[in-house]
Amino acid sequence: MSTLLQAVLAKPDCQTKEDRQIRMMARLFFATFWLIFFVGAIRKWMFPSMNILYLLQDVPIGLAYLYAFWAGFVRRSVLLWGCVLLAALVMLQAFSQMLILELSPVVILVGLHHYLFYIPMMLVFPLALEDFYRRKFILWNLLLVIPVSVLAAFQTTSPKDAFINLTAGGEAMSAGVDVIRATGTFNFTIGYAIWTAIAASMVIGEWLQPQGERVIQSRVLLALSTFCAFLCFLVSGERTAILLSALAVMGGILAAILKGSKRSLMIIGAGIVAIPLFVGATAIIAPQEYVVITDRFTSDRNVDEAQGRTMTLATGFLVQPPVSLLGAGIGMGIDAAHPGDPMANVYTYKYSEYDTIRIVMEAGSVVGLLYVAARIFFGLGMIFLAVVVVRRNGSPHVLPLAMAMFAQCYLLDLTRFGPATFAQVALAYAFVFGAEISSRRQVELQPDAMFNQTRFA
Image (tube, rainbow, N blue to C red; front, side, top):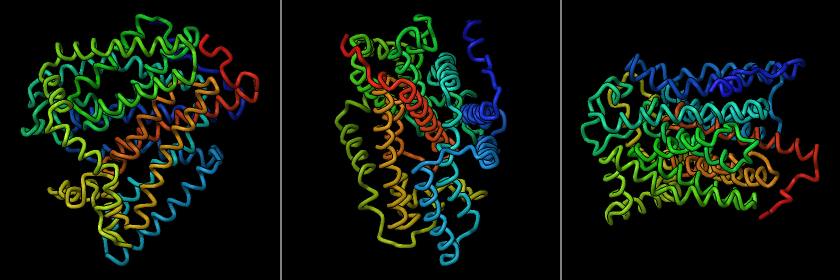
């Protein structure tokens, strides 16, 4: 364990100005990660009903933007100009709505914040995510899953009104829920689901690494992290957490195939064989959640409901929103845009609980559809980029990560709970971009090593 702590706490030499800039941006990256991870715990266990705390992670993010602007530490690429164009369209639409529809400036500002504020994270953080800092990120996640799995198990087996299951409003979990849905240190299930997918991606990627290149050299500790990572989402009682982590597993299978070694394929095969063991452990630790989740995935009624929900998520934004060039107002369906209103959450359901449908209703048929299309094609592009990284013998963690985050971009929430969802997705994609930069530099240094020369060896 002391070796692990030394690996985490060790500081690389920062002799040049560029090295110091990288270190500063990496510090802001990790400050953002830790605040996202713990802000829910602060809100629900220390300062309930103090909603302003949900912006706590925006402090290091905002500082990162200011530092990047001052130091010129921005990744200049096609993505930069695409983000600028998208932001200009959304802002122009928002201000037009404010003038024509006479919307509250608070609604518009919150809407713009949730739509746009977290996008530049993918432009400023990747340049700092060199191998050393990506390995730190991997290690922290591998270690975090161990205590969080214990916390999640206690949450699922505790009463709904137990302190450990309080919400950010300081109240007990809703009496209408059929099962306790573990949230870990997050104050809502979707934030927890995204983090479990990120952690699962880190675990899967580690197993695909050669033994000497792993962040955790101990197979026992890595096996424990693997068990705890699967336990985190299996005991959650949340289908979204299981879906995202399952997509991460699919990304791991594809990465193993692309790496082309028998060892990688055998490891993935062993992991698939071990899934019943994880499920069995879930049934022992959290039997109520096991019964409910099994019913949700197998009963005819729930299967039909899930298929209909998936179809709505996939295509609803094309057919459900009424045609409107102006839209109802960017931010109108976001809870945080209506501070002080006891019925704030009703605004979301007045439009749609499905993120992409609500976006088209809020931003209008043209701008809304462009924004949703940008999300979908960007997610697809990141999968392609992750494939390139793996083919270059780069970090195998990126493909499980890109697969899981694509589902979040396309089907699930980014804007309603932006500080917990969009911020995490942006961190994950920053990791992918950082790995791509490193793999490209490696190819430039060793052109002959671009592809694995020991396929199926």
